[in-house]
Length: 103
Image 1 (cartoon, one colour):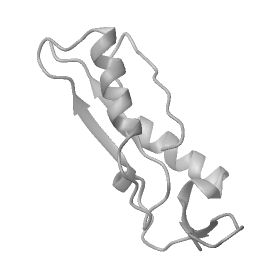
Image 2: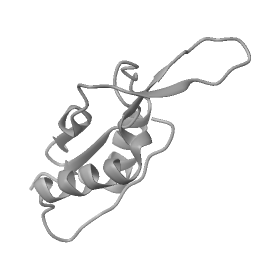
Image 3: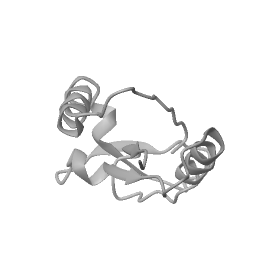
């Protein structure tokens, strides 16, 4: 992804509510559910187009930090790895997830 953010919560996140919220956002902002097309054209930007198989769950992950990896450094390392992941250009250009702390 070209941008990323981290939010921390004192309580467990309700994943279904988060997905519902993101679905609402994608209805209000249709570019969230569009994929790039027309790539690699000289002197032109990519075009975003809708696709029929859009499903927010294809862009959502739930991950858990390894045991003992609960510090700021481990979170920063995970975020760096998340940002560096390859994009699937057949899907919308966003990914969303939760990162749970192991206890």
